[in-house]
Length: 131
Image (tube, rainbow, N blue to C red; front, side, top):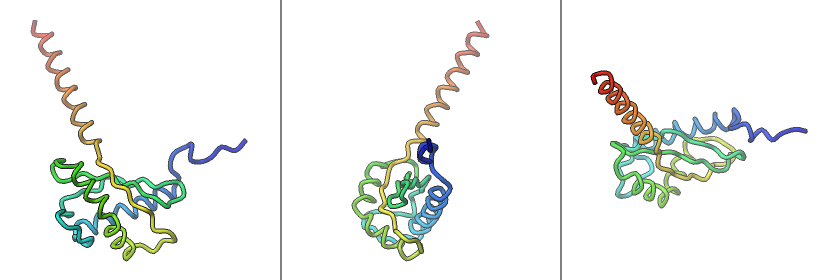
């Protein structure tokens, strides 16, 4: 029985196209080429792009500078995703231009929370030794 390769995570092609889109989105945002009203795209970081198995949709994980107003930024990017997609079409030469979905990246919040827990644990260990 042959198993579907999607059970094993993304394949090389998905990773390669995702990285290509990530780099180009970064350039588009840095140079404000999408011309999104009421949003300074040069303050947005693309942390990761995950492609669907058919390469027709891309989920771009973003975080605004300072991690503030992530939800608002995601909503604006979602509303004006057609402008981002138009700018992306000028940079990429691929068979199908994927539909873009923007998601707030929470991995930095998670890492910060873990770091605080580790520090708190270390403080508690020091207090126990000093007793």
